[in-house]
Image (cartoon, rainbow, N blue to C red; front, side, top):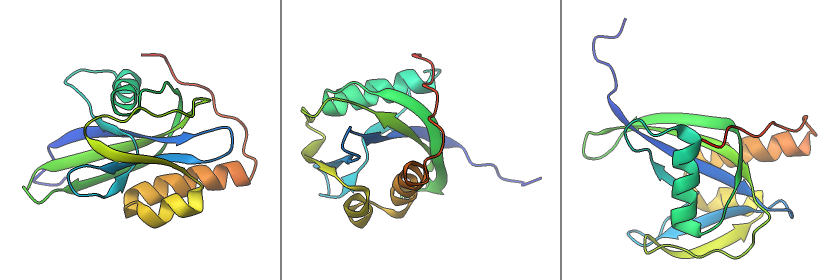
Length: 145
């Protein structure tokens, strides 16, 4: 067993797909980097409820949440533990109302999204894109909580 365990803040992000197969990405106000919508869970907050809350706060859209597609863990520059889970999500909405945390949003084809996102988020987008391209069976929607 490991002597030192990771104590981490948990983040959830959505790989949001529109009917045309594009992914929603947001540009952060703090550093101009692009990211998938999402954020940190509150203590004891159910995962789907937290993801839905974060997406609504950041974009004003509603989504249907499906399976987790990728996870990653790291220690940030402040030596704080982080853990992220990425979920496949669908929406039929196109109009995005970004929060003050972001300066821009874009619906991008997966190939383009992968060019602007960091590696863990790119891995999540690629996983979803590959599953769609290979015609894997449709996922079941997760709980509304």
